[in-house]
Amino acid sequence: MSLSTWNARTARTGRTAVRCTLILAPLLAGITACGASAKSLSDQPYDALEHLSFGGAGGAAEVDPDAPLKISAKAAGARITDVEAVDAAGRPLAGELSADGRAWRSSDLLTAGAEYTVRVSTENGDGEPGRGEHAFRTAGSKAERIDVTFGPDEGTYGVGQPITAELSGEVPGQRERALVEAALQVTTEPEVTGSWHWVDDKELHYRPKDYWPADTRITVSSQLEGMAIADGLRGGKAEAVELRTGERVEAVADISGHTMTVYQDGEEIRTLPITTGKEGFRTRNGKKVVLGQEPNVRMTGTSIGIPAGSAESYDMDVQWATRLTWSGEYVHGAPWSAASHGSANVSHGCTGMSTENAQWLFDLLKPGDVVEHINGEGEDMAPFGNGFGDWNLSWEEWLAGSALEGEGDDHAQPASGRARPSL
Image 1 (tube, rainbow, N blue to C red):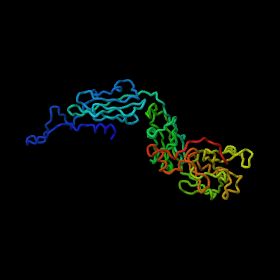
Image 2 (cartoon, helix red, strand yellow; image 1 turned 180 degrees about the vertical axis):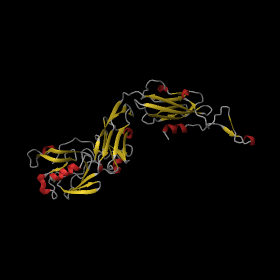
Image 3 (tube, helix red, strand yellow; image 1 turned 120 degrees about the horizontal axis):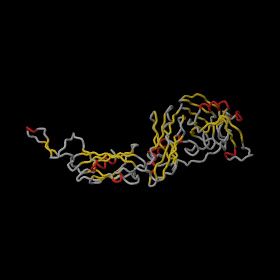
Image 4 (tube, rainbow, N blue to C red; image 1 turned 90 degrees about the vertical axis):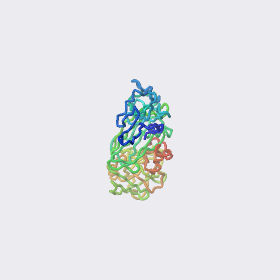
């Protein structure tokens, strides 16, 4: 039941629609005696449109979206019993009915630049039901607009790929966040349980409870345009994005065991000898989503703070590099450390392996696939700010970052800049 319906029904005075008394005389059994203005319950409701006033929305001009919609009954003894107002996108407009049923007023701001249809139910002085329908269009608004940019770009991704929504302005309040979040829609085939999570005041991520199923079709869109978020702030434009997931590919790197086991659609397909970060450059533990891939990339020690000319300094071209973090953690070919593959951790934070294995893995992986590092001594992968560490939050922690599901975003971390790769 809509808010407007509830208010209208609870405001009724308790008067029955038609006053009748059943006469039990034998010759008149089953005949109903009513007043002179009685109307059969099977008749159509009368057209109430001419008995209603729609205030500023009653004319042909576009309506000010920052002014409330006001509807009143003009005829003596008539009253409004129900109001249903929706825009072309199906968004309802909440409102309140006066105690005497003579007037209704919207309690939310109208959407700017939208077509509205209003259906009003009434009763006249004799209790006869009426119906009236009115349409109007709202004008644009001079309020500040918040545009939305969805990511990633259209294409096929791994089952760990989060969806991102970057806002052009900050939305700090919980109520305002809930309005924005509810207008950002994710539809999937097959159906998947998921939720948005506020990373900060300008960015949201969306992920399912578990990884996306393989071959899922995903559409991300917004109904925010023109919608009132706060005083002087309305929703702006957003371009819808269509994605799909490919096969489920996961790689689990055992840091202490010096191996990486690769799974495809749940089945183990290969185990590779590896080396990871040595003391002082430990590889992060946790789940990381593939950000991108480069057949060749130049890696330098200075890009991660190692002084040029020092014992740890390096500058070299690396092949078959799969990026896991913005700070420069990759999986790549490392023929210079072949003697340590499978036996020791000697890198500056990346996961190294033979050139042949790196190329095989490079060809198998795609952005959105998941690489997980376990049993290491390094710090944990951050959920946000250094790539997609979203899967390192439990489902309960994830929901806590939703303005609709939880109490805030205590686990979110601000985004950081993108650094050059480590080796």
